[in-house]
Length: 150
Image 1 (tube, rainbow, N blue to C red):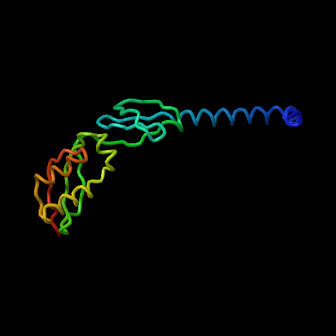
Image 2 (cartoon, rainbow, N blue to C red; image 1 turned 60 degrees about the horizontal axis):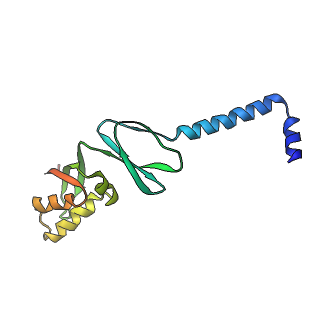
Image 3 (cartoon, rainbow, N blue to C red; image 1 turned 45 degrees about the vertical axis):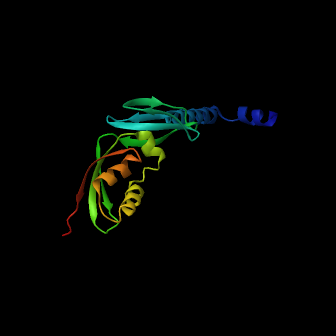
């Protein structure tokens, strides 16, 4: 330990000052990574060591880096997604996320929910069953539109 201090004190002052500045900049950058910005009409799910802590809406938030993380970030307005139905047709699905926690922790797998309920309805598109399928993962069904092939 004495050798380290002796060698450190024996260094030119500019090197010691540069090392201190680099260390301070590194610590500052690390601490700044804890800021999370959530835009209007979005919601973020915050977890601490993979355990749900809270949801946060529009604003700047600060959480200690490494301990906390943004596990999910979702738009609360009307979303649209192009999907392939099991019968081979393509469609555009319009939906709204109504239960963000259910949607996030169910794996937010819209395709699997549609396939499961499509299979239960003998490969026919039944809007009521589709609504139930999406409801089971926290989604409010709005509309489904078949995409015409050129």
